Image 1 (tube, one colour):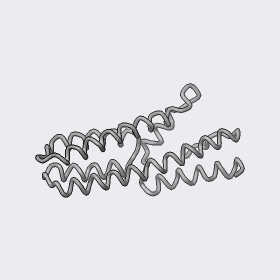
Image 2 (cartoon, rainbow, N blue to C red):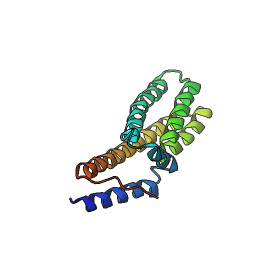
Image 3 (cartoon, one colour):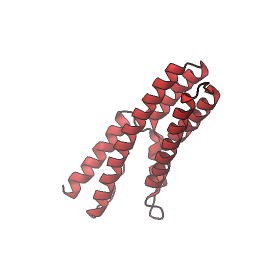
Length: 151
């Protein structure tokens, strides 16, 4: 793929992530913080988010497997995950967290389990899409181009 086509694909993919609700304006704000002194800023922040996500999803699953579920603890994990998702602009993950918290509040174990599965699915889709986005960015840079900005 030539540079112009790579850049076009990158722009289209990123636009789709916003259009389909995976990302919101907070992701754009993160991108604006990236500059020549920190060219991998967004990748580094999102990589930390991915690592934290794995840990929090594991903590939620373990808490929900207990014979007596501590819904306040589960809610605490979900609240933390909602905050970190909001900080990177992971809109769909954040929205699932909001719904999940309602099930924690009503101590609905089945609803919590379904929400956890939804959360895992949304996280997986987001991670796949962002990894593809970052891969396209690397290809554009390797071809000598600059990353086009979205307005």
